[in-house]
Image 1 (cartoon, rainbow, N blue to C red):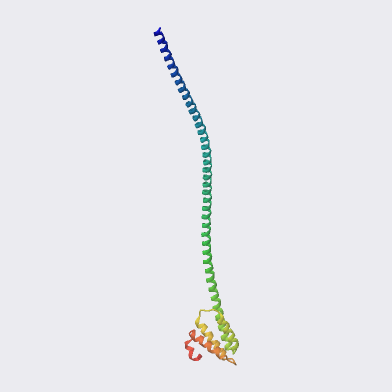
Image 2 (image 1 turned 90 degrees about the horizontal axis):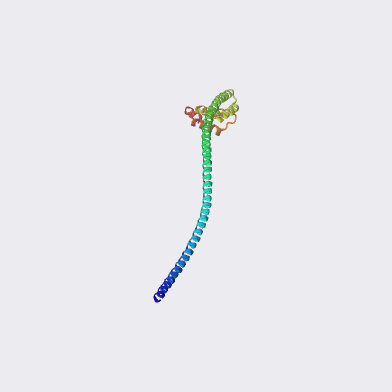
Amino acid sequence: MKEHEKLVEALKNENEKMNKNQKEKTEQLNKLKHEVDDLKAEKEKLKADTVHDYENLEFVCKIKDLQIEQERKYVEEFKTENEKLKRAQTKKTEQLNKLKSEVDELKMEKEKLKAEKAEIHNTENKDEHERLLMAGFFAQMSNKPKEAIDIFTEALTLKTDNEEETALLHFLRAEANAATETPRNMDIVLDCSKAIEKGLEGWKTFML
């Protein structure tokens, strides 16, 4: 009987021990379940956060792509505009060079015309100078000193490179002035000085 009681007691103890272990196991299992649930919740949160982050990242990437596309567009527009400006500048340079050439040609033509005009003018002056010289000389020879003075004075207003003719005109005007009824002595002296200055050295004593 005692052995039976001992066996029962042992079984009872063993059962209690097993129940205790079972309880501990159950508590550990529940704890693990809670941890698993927490981990699942954390995982879902991470997944949601990751999805949100991916959405944000995708949005940011789209914005960046738009910015890059806009910048690329600006670069292309700038290149196109720059090419237009370069072509326009090249065209302007060509036009400027052409205008410079035309201006140079016009300047050369102008200088040529000026030279021709000067030559014509000099020729006309020379012819007129000689004509007046002869007309004054004949007026003086015809005893018309005042008319001769006017003619010689007109001849002296013409530009000429012939120093000898100029000196002769001054001398002839002085001579015509001396032949008038009221000679202007100072004018005669001045004309004589001019004649000497222009090279009529052979007539110096007479004029003085």
